[in-house]
Image 1 (spheres, rainbow, N blue to C red):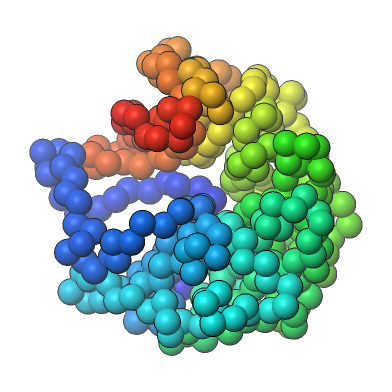
Image 2: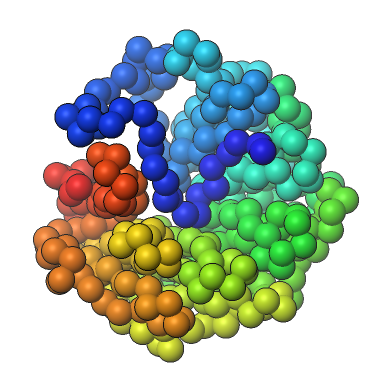
Length: 368
């Protein structure tokens, strides 16, 4: 099976050392492994995938605004636990030398890896932000076909990716209709002045092209967020075999959409027992109590140094959730913007890591 990590569910056992004394120690090895120490403005999560099919994980670290960053960091993983910088050879355009497409506005945002054509090679989608023009500039998101050798070829124009003024924030590969082909969901957002950008759902035709699904299958207007957009996470929370989706984001409350199994989604937030509190930021699915059901963690924070309590929803197994924040001991108050589950001490139980920032976007003490 091709090895890559989708930005959806972060669950798993991180292997190797059984001793808690070793598992709980972290050492910064960024320079030693060959990461380039350049100050750039990050945007979105780093994404892991085996770009050259050598059995080793490679890495893309997104950077925002190509006029200043001149593209993301792109690394090939080596067998000696180091990385090689391949930015100049991987096929991503550098705005110093010219744009990839006349409709590439250089405002690159969320990155997503997935093998959309089932050829065994990892492909890449990048959502473009519209350059901050609130619909005044036409642009096209970027789809790169992976060649399997550490290089990529631009194919947005061939694959049917639209030219529009929508302000893209994130892209997600997900087989929403269970036909064995990865489809594409693009999260757009409503800006501070109220300009609305409908979300997009592209159905994979199986021949290297996509068709836009009407009303994005019911997700076109799902939770528009301000400023930073909205966070999106796909997961099968009701174990019916179809991927559902949860949303959060600045100036919105959490929302849950159930996949009906017929190519459409429906908002079940209230029926499922979500509190729909504002504001919320990061979300993470994880079975924290090992009962076989995915639970939902919501990190809460906002601009202006908001200090709030997070929310943990326990999955009841009947399509509903119960808030268990207090009884779970998650009572700390801070300005939370991100979260991730992981068994960091290898005891078989998922732990939770939550980021905390000040009102000027500087990181304060985080929580584990």
